[in-house]
Image 1 (cartoon, rainbow, N blue to C red):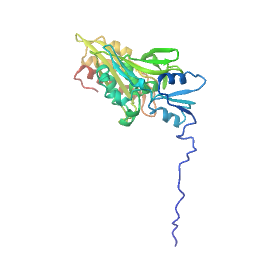
Image 2: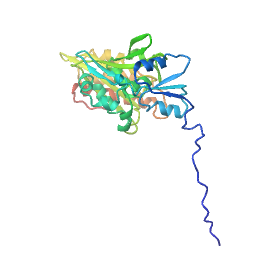
Image 3: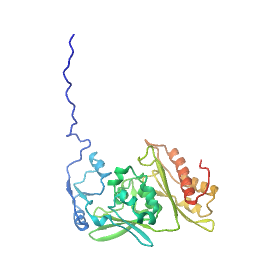
Image 4: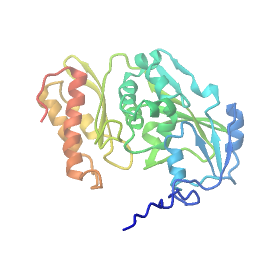
Length: 308
C-alpha cells in the first residue's frame, strides 16, 4: 500500500476576475478646492468624489460604480474646518467622522450629530469616513442623513458657477441619489443651533456597526408643559430618510406625557410604508418604528414610561 504525498496544486486568487477589482480609472488628488472644481467642471468625463472611500471603493470593486475619473479631496484642508456661531454649526464636508465626534463645536452646536456618529460603523470606519461623504452617499439606512433631516439642516454645494444651499428636505431623491449636480462638490454641512432643544438618536441593527434596520432621530422643545417644536426623522424605512410630519403635528397638540408620546409614536409608524426585504419585513419595521420613536421622544423629555 502506498501513500500519495504529493501536494495538491496551490490555489491562488484569480486577480484578473471582475470580482472585487474596479475597472480602469484616472486618479487625481488636488490640494485646493479650486483644482477640484476645475476637474469636476468637465461634464464630458464621468467623475466621482473620493472623500473617505468607505462606500465608494467597495462600490467600484463590485463595479456598481464605473467612474472615469476619481477626484480625491482628502488633501484639501479647507474642507475640514469646523466652526460654530450663536445660530449655526458649520462642518466642512471633508471632516473625518472621528474628528467631528470629539469636536467641542459639534457637541455644543448639534449634539444629535454626536449621538448619531456613535452608531456609524466601527472606529476604523469613522477614522476614514467623512461627514459630507456619508451624507452625499445617501444610503437610506445611514445615520448622518437622518440626523441632518431631524435637525432641519442643509448642505452647501459648490461648482464653478458659485455656491448654493440645499436643505436636507430637498437633498435626498432616492436611494444613493441626491439633488447635487454632476459638476458640484458638497463643501459644507450646516445645522441650526437650538440651545433649548433636546435630542435623541436610537436605532436597531443586527450587529453593532451594521447599518440600521430602523433608526429614529428626534428633536423636541417644551414650553409651559406642551410641545412647542417636534421633529422626527426615520432611516431604514424607505428609499430616503423621511420626516414624520403628521406625527410631528400630532405631538404639538399635547405635552410630554407617556400616553401622548405613545400616541405620537404610533402615528409615526402608521405614516410609513416600508417594504419587505432580506433583512426585515415591513411589519417588523413598523413595529420597531413605534418603539424607537416612543423611546427617543421619551429620552428628550425625561418621561418615565414603559415602552412596549
